[in-house]
Length: 263
Image 1 (cartoon, rainbow, N blue to C red):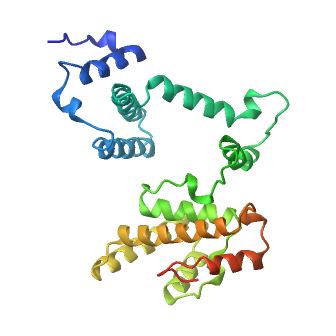
Image 2: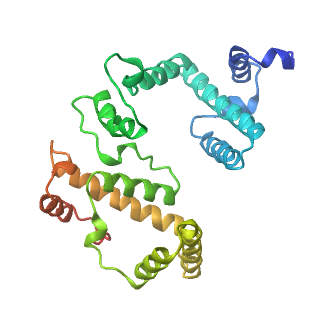
Image 3: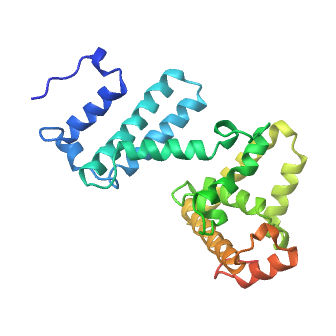
């Protein structure tokens, strides 16, 4: 039996790495040794949400604990991968360090300046494209499909808008959207978030009453939108859709129609 480490011996990063290696090694924890990247997925999500809750609560002690739990996940996945000759912790660290340096030339390179956060964000996508030269980077590539449906829909809409695609202008307003627009436009600035939450909450209740699952429905629609967006970008060839004229973009968008997704 492995002697448990004393609290004072577990305060360094190397000690934590050693603990994970012991848990996954011969004579380690039977449950831990049975896990795979896929089986740990839901626990990783839970830990991420717990960290977000601690951040929202401004709970420094909770953040310390939850960041530690996430760090353990990084070490577990790295050690499991090392045992399968896939990758190891050093590869993860090298990848992260290289990416951080490459995406912050205004910090690590001479002669490159960025005076504001807006300038940094403006160069972000260009820097990402340079990481994979010769490969067309689509607008939605950086939006993980595993995100919660509402966050996913909001992010992919935001990226489409920044790329010049204003698809809402082509849509016919429904009574619902008109009501929502009216309520939000008339609400004081400090009440808009509350009104939006109320509208969404009531809409979820209505959908459930009609037998529809809001998460599934929104994810399905957002993924269909993503498919159409990708088809539009591919049809544009080497030209970024942000560089197309409104007429050209509209023609490609309509030509990339997806069943069940209206204009």
